[in-house]
Length: 476
Image (tube, rainbow, N blue to C red):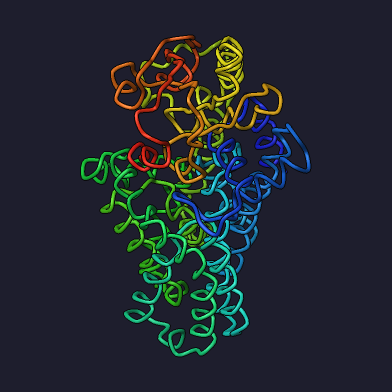
């Protein structure tokens, strides 16, 4: 209950996170696939925005519900592992005080839904080990099929589970027809997305290189485990490490140790491939639950004494580092773009100023130019924000060659004038015969180069028809 209240209050603090605006824009353009995610979250974002137009809280209800469910279900997993009430409370507290739960609850994202579905999968497998009811495997197949409409990460989980089960058992899992029937259903439901990717040149594979560039590649892999442990908070990190140890040491937990190995395999693959720390986050609560079960069963006096300050420090750290407790006026300008992108106040501020400045630049054009104008942005997040505010600003159609927006449509060949957001005169001159600055955005709390210190250009005379030029402009 407390977690839900804190998450709800945190979700109302600033404004739209840029990926939320992107999901709404993608949801307006339904498709079986996108460059960087499946269709489920865009449809969810669009549905919430359609039902409750302009409501930030309503948009984030699915994220809040998903995160609360992760915390609750982690306690249920502890109970499945034989943990009494103290173990369940400890598990829920560990998850609730982590960035991966509390932080994700503040914005609607693919990560928060993906994390929930992975937790559901681990719960179903833990329960199957205890009961051997094959209906649980069929349910796991359904959950996997849904998760593939969010991200394409879940096959890594199942490959790791199959390898671990074949090595450590229960090998009976691999002999269950229900498991393979479920796999067949998952493949069938994934076909539309696979066909979309094939027809568009497998852009989601190319996104892997983009992600590696953002996470630092090999150098980032070296910091993957420490940063992940930090993300789980003090209590979560302790329970996680203790849980991994106990899955191999404790006879009571031995039937579930294959899930611990599966987690290690997933972490290794994500770290080596340069993935983000939130990839596979839903596989951790089961191991945290195992650690909490054994910690509460250990009759060691110093553990009982240390528990109270550890929990208190975890709650304090979560309040300070995982909640937006500061007002916008207390922030200083971000030193660079890397410090501002991602979940942060900077990523939620500045969108109204961007829309207002773009609308002013467009209205400042001569009427004959306005009639043949479109808006093109350097970054997809700019296009998403302008697309969301378009009914209020009366802007012409919005385009961007960046990320998924590059696949949402091509400017018409009749568009002779472009209000271009961002970029430089030198770069734009390769595409247009005339490039003239008509506006500037200097929002101090914006993202450098996206909503801060950017120029708005009046570009005329495309050097080629848009239908020929757009594929060359498009980039991830």
